[in-house]
Image 1 (tube, rainbow, N blue to C red):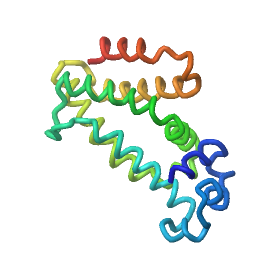
Image 2: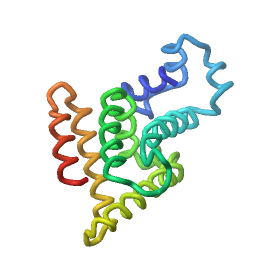
Image 3: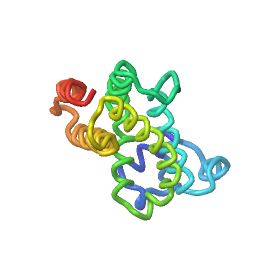
Length: 171
């Protein structure tokens, strides 16, 4: 999966082949097919696993209620995960812009995202903001935007400063 992640990140989903992935991984093409039905199944597994890691740091006590401390922890961990796995996030953004590939994971992605948006909505409702779901979606959009800008220029993007501003404005 690591080899596939890098090939997809470098070549894009459409241009990547199982042969390229097998060669990078140093395994036979047949071995890959022992674990994955297709290239589509492989990308789907990579993305779901990546999101599982990401969502594991959300609402760590799993009570459906986000405290300020849990929200700060989530943001800090989100930025750490972003820094540690740029190829994954490059694939994520590439797929979000490819409707045919996005359809492969759309249902699973929404199953993962909606509880987060609902929890954010509840957080902002308790804060008394008008239209808390709009705030929840804004947080998601801001995190996407920050992430996209960072992966495009990781050496010069002021990630820590942006993170601190984000925390001060939205938590």
